[in-house]
Length: 145
Image (cartoon, rainbow, N blue to C red; front, side):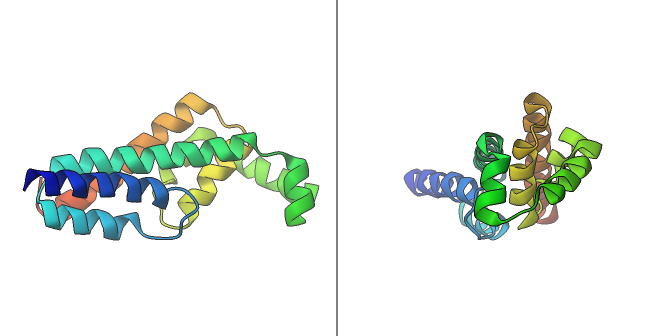
């Protein structure tokens, strides 16, 4: 039955990765389901964190390659609006990456951090800390650690 646990962890990795990109579903629900099914808090913590973190890094990279001209043209966002948002992002910089775990808005934050070119190393490290903290708290709440 170990292969079933491995399959569950693979599904957790794929699901948490996708949930941190543009797919609108809850990685928390998936995490808790796999955690309950496998009873493996450390494996779920490692795999869930890794998948969700790499998904956010991918989303950050998508933002990084974005161009102001594209946003203005395709989404009809005015340059003044982009400049106002940049001021807000610049105020907190990479520290905003700690909030990339928040459902729904976390993905938007990751894209914005990439789009406005926050420092990649610290952004990615802080994303990892936020994602790890999120799943660690779930394990604590369920008394598995």
